[in-house]
Length: 600
Image (cartoon, rainbow, N blue to C red):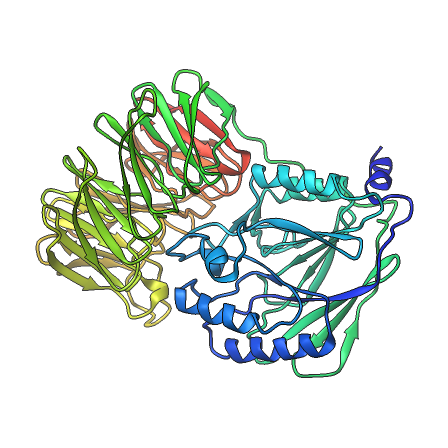
């Protein structure tokens, strides 16, 4: 049956016009030597007369406006079309979400397709805002399946993305890769172009040939020129600035008759209920009354019944939503990449008020009794009146803010400029700021600060230098002075404060409990899988922690594991929402929403 499908997808006799195209990856514009190497490639590509160039992601180093402007300026020197995809460096710290692709390169959608010389090319977006990991969600998979199925009979297919699927050993980087490879195999796609690994590699999975192209900014940079001939792809590996080439074994359009199997999907626990949702959410959902609200990257808000998960209503949004919805009294707040913040009535989703801010909103807002605190991509933290959305104040910093936390008359937020800020909640006055590290890469911009009595606890990535530099700080909430510090890898998940203890989930797969007043470690428990943005939450009798592998672990307050099960597929970045004895959790790469009972 599979053979018949492949023959149908590939056709009996491919009809192509010979041409050659270039493949580069990981130019990291902004890193040392990156601009010079990209300029040299532009010269070589123009001289060799390639039909077009595909760039497999990590176009920039940190996704700043200056890097995008420089990248656009250099790449426009190519005489032939240029087809880039996004990588994790383009999205991990992105203050404006994925909008720079359109703003600077004129590309309206991160994933798209085109035909050339009888070959269909599908360009995928595996980047995830705020993450080094990659994923292809079900919405994009459905699009890919339709694009490959609808290509002309006899047309070969090439797929390009940043994160490489199933490397045949080593660390996994791509969620949903089994489902992706099943689509590629069924539809007869023969060639996948990827980057991310900064290496020259080739492997085969399920009859699909995968080529990893090295980083272009390296001292001895390499790139690929691929010739499309009558019935095959011929891959030339080239060194930047050299005329010599290394030619690999050709890849025939027709796949081999016998291929290895593609791994099956991960099985997930059924829970109290689990339903499909039209909204792909990588972050937490919001719950108001008997309804759960999911804001998705497709630009849609979905409302589900808390009782059984039934889909009650959907609302189109102006742009993709990367931040979680926020429940504030009698309203649900939704923010989008377009910089629009909307307060909705929970029952019918009618608009109470709408505010348009200057930059994209990619981090979940904070809230107190009267105000909503929203960080935008232009480096500002805004305070809006909950009652009518009026702008109360705006504070500008060096870079964009992470998720803010309000406590008493203060609001705290980390910033990608390396500081933690404390502002007066009523008027936005700067009360203090504390620099935690000189390097952008170890700034406190990912997690939400945790107010803890007279302290506020902040986390950030573990600095590489100096070797004893802390990655957790407990700051005096009134002065910003350091009360205690720790060096544990808790820089992504936000801390949880329960009475006299603070709990951390780490990227090394540990849960750590410390004394709130002194920072003394009381216990740590190894879960065996890393924890990233899924923060620990308090449940009856203990805490729940989500791992990036999709497991939920339930521990008592002394660190004993009470239960654990597979609650989602890879990757789990969302923090569960606790509703009495239940947990509500989105599974982004299964595009589902599930409800679980807290184990006793």
